[in-house]
Image: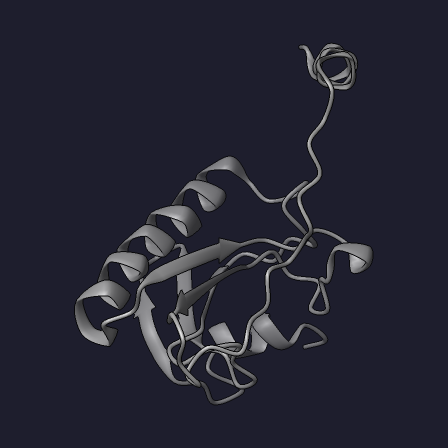
Length: 136
């Protein structure tokens, strides 16, 4: 099996499971950005969010929501990032659709994640132009 996440979901590579159902599998990240950093994957392989079946994507985000709630309950975190990286330029390193659930802690060494971008206000013209491109 070439895909490490497929192998994890199949039990061929050990992981610390935090949740599973018929469509998804979630485990603790082995290189966490913070204490409790989890990865949620669909069991069925897809390269990235563009290719995943809608039912699998829905199940992944339902699991991410459940784990976000659980992180607040058991970790006493101050916030949670739910992140999907689509493509290498966006930071995707494992090419199996997945979502990171990253608990955040204010002023703590449990949190090693920086802010992922520097916000820059957009003009009304820029927003209108981009909005027109996305209109379906």
